[in-house]
Image 1 (cartoon, rainbow, N blue to C red):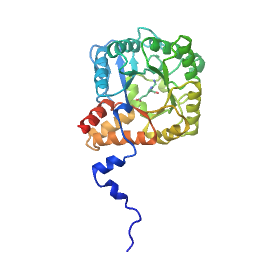
Image 2 (cartoon, protein in one colour):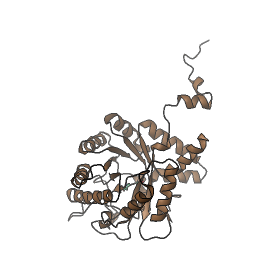
Image 3 (tube, rainbow, N blue to C red):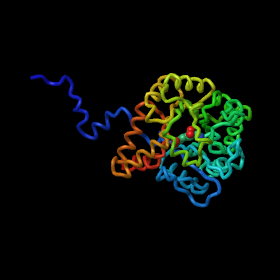
Image 4 (cartoon, protein in one colour):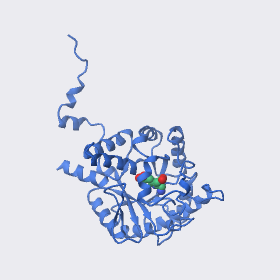
Length: 330
Ligand code: PBG
């Protein structure tokens, strides 16, 4: 009689054995919570396509950030929803703009216990919804946009950001932001570069979350990457590191596991993956219908993103996972 050469099942037999030989672990210290703050509201507002996620008031943002920090979540990224939008996205760099106001309040209340890394972009602030300034033909003007990014970086640094996170996918954005920060003496403020950011359908619910619609039904394919490409993603990653990125991000996460793995192998800086709004909403919708187990699905997807090589994960499930992992430890 032939027996199997190696019995793989021996180490799978009990939870303790499985726990001991697990190659990848999920730790709350690896998670970052993306949060939304809206100007001019008195109560947090639910986001229809992201059940459980809200547009915060400054006060409710601070309360929730404090709670997350208490659960062990080390950082948040912040998106602003301004009351007024214009062609240049003025609110993004206004010292009294919503994100700057919120950053100061967070810093005052939380000190240095929570890493603050605001998203640095224009789309939430422009009336046309693009991530940059438009040229005369309605295209996005790369180099004019870089100047605006520099201004936003300074406003965010002044308000207390630990890192700024340029997400507009303009060429040279990391170098321009680094130069602006250094020029004003903010040498300690870091850059989390959205390096490999794909033009993805999975950002749909996010646009709802920040009240953005792109003028004329347009899209971002002229600046975000084609999901067909991985070599191009690595070129973006290398450029961003050369321009001074302290960390690089790959986004979305679950559709880019190969890109996360390749990025991890290509550079030494921390690799961040963003489990985006659509990834969140797909899981929530299916679990609301009773088709998937929520806790198991959340842990499995985040585990897979870690296994692919992400050091840090941005996820709207951060608080929930922190509670889950905390309760499992007893
Ligand atoms: C741009 C930005 C977007 C997201 C993060 N930063 C939207 C876009 O590129 O259209 C998407 C995040 C998500 O879907 O959760 N400021």
